[in-house]
Image 1 (cartoon, rainbow, N blue to C red):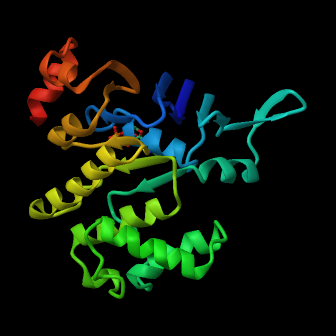
Image 2: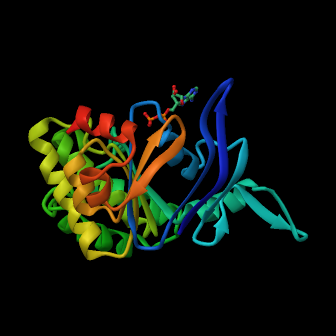
Length: 251
Ligand code: ADP
């Protein structure tokens, strides 16, 4: 579902991702862990096409995200092509990013109606179902500021799912929350991971959550994957010294 081939991303002299290769198979849940500044968020931003790699290619569901084929040649992707491929990806951010001037229901229906061309009635019916799924069936009429951070984040998850993405990117979705609100958000994501076939790529500092939902954990250091494997292997028998140091600092 996701393929990075020889991806290099630089900011000036700073090589943030260094000839990176990795894949995520369809329906799998993969977690990126590693020290701050190791390049994890940059990967999600590349997938959201908020950034472009200097070298390499990124594919999503068999289509190039970064490139398109024209006359049998691979050329940098145009905006229309990128937009089409990107529709397969939903993202939940650290800072919720709900539209503050719209009620909860409209936050969720806005993109399906305007981007997917869904009818308002269908979008609203689906939005109500998604609000039930995230445990907020009674909040459809509230404004974001009337909700707790945890509730806002659950609306943001519903909003991402409303676009029927095949891939869900989660960028430290609990790190802006008060500690008592974290569990509710993680429970929703855990249910989603266990009951749907959506592919998930998560950046998280919640190691118990990572252990629970991940099929694979990739340990990053300085823009490279230094170790990967099942959560049991990474958390119980890490091979790399840097992984051991990182885990002993965060666990
Ligand atoms: P992580 O998510 O692992 O904490 P990031 O992907 O956010 O790491 O950042 C990796 C490196 O890229 C850091 O050194 C950071 O300073 C740098 N970086 C990220 N975004 C930018 C940017 N827009 N401009 C310049 N440097 C950036």
